Image 1 (cartoon, helix red, strand yellow):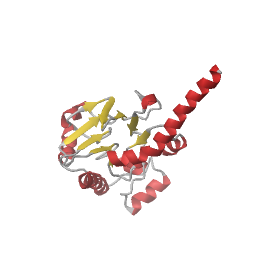
Image 2 (cartoon, helix red, strand yellow):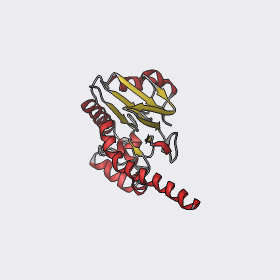
Image 3 (cartoon, one colour):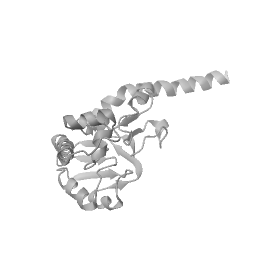
Image 4 (cartoon, one colour):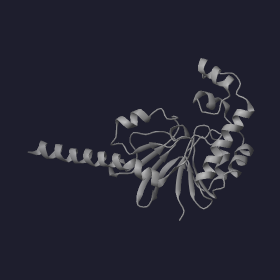
Length: 213
């Protein structure tokens, strides 16, 4: 049976993102430059960029089967259409869908089966709102729709943890250990959040009842 997967923020071919996000592919000399200043770390070598790209693509191919479905929620790569096409050809999964990110060229659209700026999908009766950017309110949020996002490279994880009733998840590689996330993994992640969400909704009903008493 085929599986559904999600990832974001691969930034294939993007040297600066490796230093800015402290991705674990730097040489020792590059690590020292990044330690001093992650935004002005000097040149990241082509060998490091290739090591980064190979690792992320291998992680997809290791987990996602050819007949599965993969959603990439933006920032696929930094480069021309031809470079993006070369990266796409290295992903064995046949059914790859795409949510546009701020680094993506419009020409990338034709490399993917389905392309959105943002939108709702439904899988096993679960509605999921997809956007490259994190949101705090989205379509059907009050009715239990999940929201998956990228863009922020894990920087909202603490905030998400502090708001357990929000049915949200950063699926960008910096927040997932550089691997795609499966739908069953999301189900497990959302279970305690859905419990908190239901308790919050129930409390709203109690507040309304009290105000009418």
